[in-house]
Amino acid sequence: MDNNPTEGVASAAMESSSQQEEEEFSIDALLKNLEVFQRRQQLETLERIIMENSWLEHHIARHRESLSRTTKVLQDVYKAVALIQNAVERCRREESEADRAWLAFWGIRRGGHQGSWI
Image (cartoon, rainbow, N blue to C red; front, top):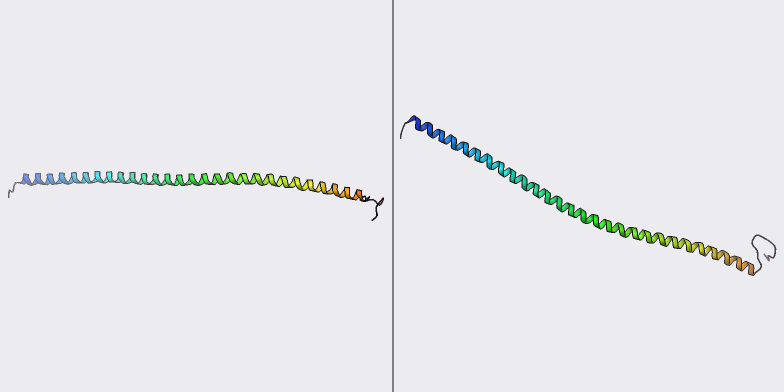
């Protein structure tokens, strides 16, 4: 065993330098790991958002199709109601004309007593 004081100082300096390199290496490794972790988190978040967006687009498309079908049904119903209204008006007119013709056939006039057997 040497008791040379310069060797002890040199040895301590080497140990200190080695520890400092390990600490720097550890900090660098930690920072790299943190960057990798953050990047992975960003990619996972992006993937989740893309999947949610795809799901939403699918549902929007389904609702648009449903709205289109509903609009078509409403148009058909509107046309049917218009046809029914026209048919009811025509029926009333024809019934009124038929009533007048029947009454005229029997010589009955509405609102007047002339020629009326009632």
